Length: 234
Image 1 (spheres, rainbow, N blue to C red):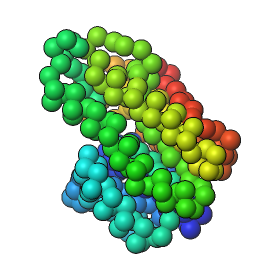
Image 2: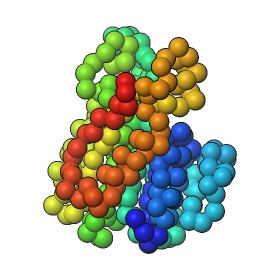
Image 3: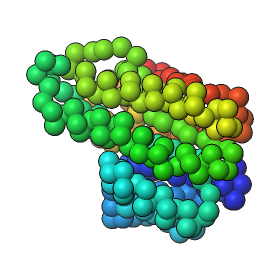
Image 4: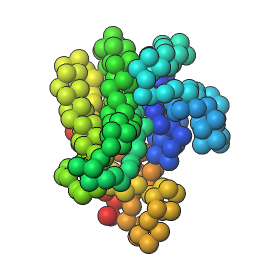
C-alpha cells in the first residue's frame, strides 16, 4: 500500500469503520471516510484527522447522494483504488410472518442498497482504471436462517450474493470483489447488549480490518467472489 492509493470506507464512524480507516492510514493510503454526518465522523475519528484523511457526509441509501459524494472523492484524488463497504446494521426482528415493511426496508436499505449504490458510482471508475478492489461485509449468520433474524439474515445473504455476482461481472476487467463474514464483533454496543458473553471469543475490529486489508491488497489478486468467515474463537 502506497500513499498514491485512494481508499473509500463507508460507515467510517462505526467501530469497524474506524478500525478499517486506521488500517489503511497505517499503510500510507489516502482514506476517504464516509458516513451520515461530518459530526459523527469528526467525533469518531478525531485522533485520526488530517491528511491523508478526508471526511464526507452522505446518505448511502440515496443513489443521487452517493453519486454526488463519489464525485467529490474523485475531485480530491482522481482515482479510487479500494472500496470498503462497511456501512450496515443489525436488528433482531419479529417472526417472518409478522415483519412490518419498515423493518424490511430499514435493513435492506442499510445492508444491501448501500452496496449497490456505491457499486453504481465506483465501478465505472474502476473499469476505466482497469483495476480496483471492493470488499463488502456480510455476516456469518447469513449462512442459514434463524428465528427472529429472518430479515437481517436475508439482507446480509443478499450482500453475499451481490458480492458473488459483482465478482463474476468484474474479474475479467481486473477488479477483485470479495466479502468477509464476521461473527460477533467486539464493539462497545455489543458488549452493552450482551454483558454476560465471553468478549475474548469475539472478533476485535482491528483483526477484522486486517482481513479486509488483505482482500484489498495485491496479495489477494487471485481471490475473486470469496466470502471469508472471520469468527475469532467464537
